[in-house]
Image (spheres, rainbow, N blue to C red):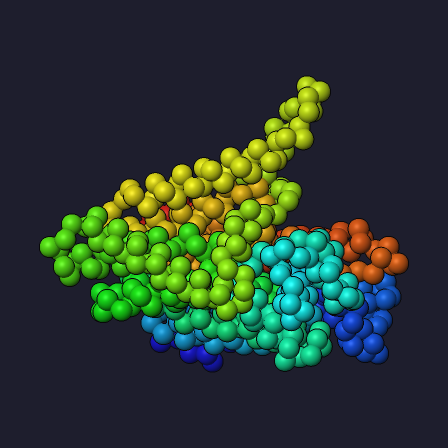
Length: 514
């Protein structure tokens, strides 16, 4: 049983908390602030945001803090494994939960970093209170919208969030009387509620599939990208995934009582009410529910139960969403609006983005027009993802339903030309509960988290335009990341990540969770 006072674990706890404090400090210099925020006038914050030395110091502290947290995460994972390096110790889940909580506390008080979407929530809540339709009107319809910190890209865009999250936005703005700093904090607390749901249900689902709950929690919830994206950035994706995992848990345990299938459908529908992307989970919830019913009542053919449960989950979801639409007056047209919206542009690391760049460069090399490539690739990716989801719905064994659902969700993400860093956090919990081996799969997670930390720390820095330091701060953050990565890689405590075990294969069933 691991002890919090053991030197390796204590070292990880202290390092992670120290890293979080560095991130907290750096956020006051280069985190996102609304013009209407009173924090702009705090005497000790002014030099951090308006003087080159203060901005530079904040950039280094923010970036360095992220990497100190990253190293602490690796230290904790190493400390919780048995001496033979094959299995995680009993009681590890408790330690991971405590560590994640300790590391997260400073992030409750950070200025938003890695993203300023939380300020979009502020003005969308104001839109609702003003009686406007966020699925038709952009936030530019509001007076003083720019002073509330919303990115101008949202100025004339429809909201991409579900109607239930609009209620949260409206309640927050009503309660705070449009006080932007208090509103950001309440949105963060709402996201913390999502984090609690994730951390509560993720290990339970993992254990239901024979996966060590502590290790699944460490991979998916204790990593710094999770803490930063879901707490510091206050992304409502935390609520989406929290309700989704709760729904999955009730579906997985529906063998205890048929009503758990109903609860699963309702909870996933609430997740859809946060962000519509989780709609892809709904048919698989029906399949998991049907598998339990077929085991109990084999008199009906398996496919009969599947269609019954598909109809039931669809009916429950429709009833809930129609009720919500009737209450808020939006009906179901928001579904069509959100189905047609999407980010413009492409990420240079996404497979479809890479394909778009290659096609565009080739066409340009031959003097051909390439203006059509991105739209074509986006439509093609969406169509292909639909085909993959349908195939996974109808093909495969019941014992692989969780795997099929995970890959269906993955198809939607990977086949999009733009992938934001926090999109990894949609998929990572699902892969963690079905088992990520301690070979190249764990390394893939670690290096992906590291990549997105490096990218997020330098991509989303708020620097006043009059300082003309944007490019310099990007380079400073990137340099800090490179130096940090090299130093971490040289530490003996991290050699296990990159020097060995890339192609190990489990020799025993229980090794698969190590």
